Image (cartoon, rainbow, N blue to C red; front, side, top):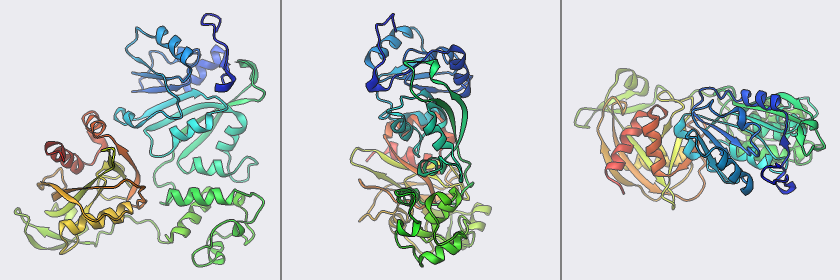
Length: 438
């Protein structure tokens, strides 16, 4: 600080870490050795940075403070493995990092902006696969709290629906300059295992949790919307008293609440093997009908449609397939895609899939290309269509895990770097689209 004439800024919540041993220990928690890419948020004077340099293949430093960013740029100017981003971490665009196969994020977050930064980094979809943050201990307690803990509340549930959160260490004020008035703590976030919770609509979940905790001492029946089928039926499903409060329900029970309001009562089973498809010959002529399970197991030729949805910025919407999918689970795919039902046309199927998977209705789609049936398409004769949409999506969670808008050049770079992140049929469609742009 003396060298650069820098004084901590209260407006940015700057409290600089002084303890080198502690800084080294915190840096170790992100497991940086050999990592493809690590991002440090708010490196400041470089206390953590000093113990990250040279360990991942690339280190990205995101610093908002102009004076500190200039000092960091000067300090690491000769290193090809360090990149400085002079930007507010609560606004940084993470979409370009998918191509690296997983982003690890670490930071001593300012108390004043920690919540906004975590929201940017941890809200799904995100390329982040591990995060280690230091924050005020009170917030860390809330992030990690379980049912029955004093700190358990809405924040606990909103984060833990997607992340396993572990409090690693409590940090006293004495290791900072200036000293904060409260203890800090280090927490680690790792993605929740797919299938550890039944599928549910995140928007319903978030809305209901926020409503339920809006007045903690009130009974839930007085805070939530009228339950489909009646409050008593929902209470019977949850096996709790009629007078239950928000803080008395576990994460799994809150998921059940969200599913109830969605009117999703069946056990997650994925796609039905008995669904009937048209089977076709090498000329894409219908020669009979067979159930899905037999079509896929025997590699029979059949028909499918893929749809690319574009927004007004020219970005394309991609979906990450649900873990319940029988083919290519949990990889990225076209905006919407699906098999033609028996007797269905490609154009009708395109409109149906957009509505069923994304929850939107469009007047029409435009055919872009025919993609021949090969092993890469799953022996599907594919028609590739496109359409436009600028509003929100309401995707089916049993079909789609998450979805995101991407710049087309970022998609091409991502496919080039990590084709294994995508359904092979989508890559065939992307190649057809890039060869014949709209």
